[in-house]
Image 1: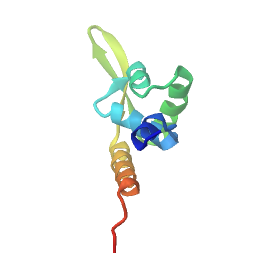
Image 2: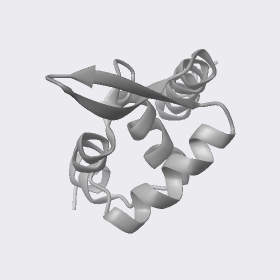
Image 3: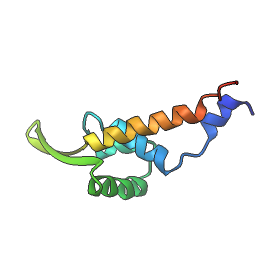
Image 4: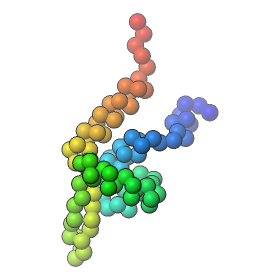
Amino acid sequence: MNASNDEEVRRRDRHDIIAEILKTAKEGKIKTHIMYKAKLSYAQINEYIPTLVANGFLENITLKRKGSYKKMFKTTMKGVRFIENFDSMRKMWSDPPNSS
């Protein structure tokens, strides 16, 4: 297996999943959209969403659309900072060391 296939097959850890949820919810999404985009099961999304809301990474918004109310989740500024820091750490981890 080559390196590109290893990346595709690699199991996601908790931080990868959290980053995917937060990236998906940046503009505000319903739970089902987050679940499908982040490739999570119903049980997994119901584990992550309340924890992310309770810790201030996601906010719960209710919008009225086409006469009905939609419960949506949107990434907070704290969540955006998490994404930025996570992406920076991932980049540092994957950059080759400088040759001296």
